[in-house]
Image (cartoon, rainbow, N blue to C red; front, side, top):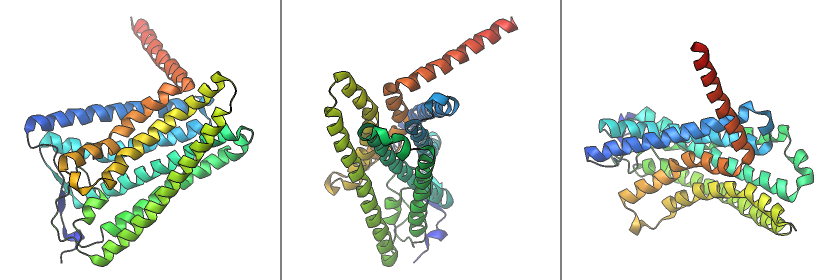
Length: 319
């Protein structure tokens, strides 16, 4: 029975065997990654540089942008490289690192979305206690707990997965190294049971976060509907809609990917769904949040206008 550490490389699932479609996937991923880098980078620099955006909501949005950048930088570069050069291989070490960072950033993002939901709940349902419950120290502790939990969760999964002996070949039915696909190559019954135990604990934790999100939004909608003025209801809803859209975009494709019936499971469908939950959200999240955050849009406009005016002044000074 060969050990997984003796395996030199894995074979990833290619998007297509045709060269034209491989190049099309490369340019598509390049556009998505550039949009994600530009959008999240803009949010990071804007929140970090402007004092008016140092609120708990924007503090957690900054960390969400960091997780989005981490997700897009973990899976997309290797997929672009394989599409450009027509290869499907990834080394054992690179596969382990990719699996670790993907689980790390995805789990951290889910925890952050739960905390951001709690932030909206306190802001709308307990506004008088907002400064106490979500002070700077409390926000820092929540962010630190999110990153630490994601790191520990990812470390346990990755260490257990890559310690298993693999005897079912080295071909993964995914365009990146995903732990469920690696487990399909395992032939260790005890190790598989350990991973099943971790998955059960993870499912309980994920379901707990989901319950917190649902309960918070039920309370939020009840509180909003009690607001007498239509303008007040609209303002309250506008602060929650971006977060609700991001949560839906994050959970829906992932839930479908892992809970879809086996009868409709095909390689092309698996690739499409995996792109929807691993690549698309990091690119769309900045757009979703900036569309509804008027303060963020105003600061971004000011920064862009300053940059353009500075370039124009430099041009005239050179003349």
